[in-house]
Amino acid sequence: MAGGVFALANPFVASIVVLQIVAAVFVVLGILQIAFTLRSPFGLSWFDLAMGALQILLGVLLVSDVLGGLVSLTLVVAIALLVEGIVLVMAGINLRAFSPWLWLVLAGAVSIVLAVLVLAGLPGTAETLLGVLLGIDLISNGVWLIFVGVVLRRM
Image (tube, rainbow, N blue to C red; front, side, top):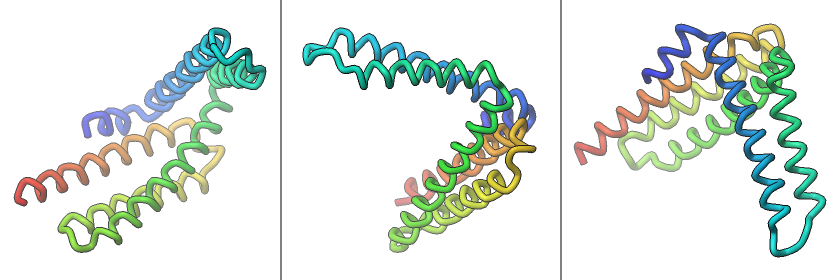
């Protein structure tokens, strides 16, 4: 929840930090992909080399074009929020026999609403929206986890 409060207080900074972390992860994964492919006992795979190079290129492109990277990453986050929301709602409905099922459904509904808001505001709001959505999602999931912990503690 503390991370969510920070992200809401500084949405542009949070968006840039997320972009830089994702770009760095792509570069590191690309380097590891190439290194493991070159050292593979199964022989050289041109496909794996190309995928590693593509991951490095994607990481560099995300950092080199910040606005484009924010729009792209915001679109990916919107899709992830939508999938997360659908999974949480389905899990909550399937767990109706247990006490915290409603909190799962509510957390899923929040994620779905956030995904729809992101998709509706692209590309104009990508600079700060990613940080705001990250903050809201972190806070809502933190609240959900606290309620689940309280209910499970009673059990």
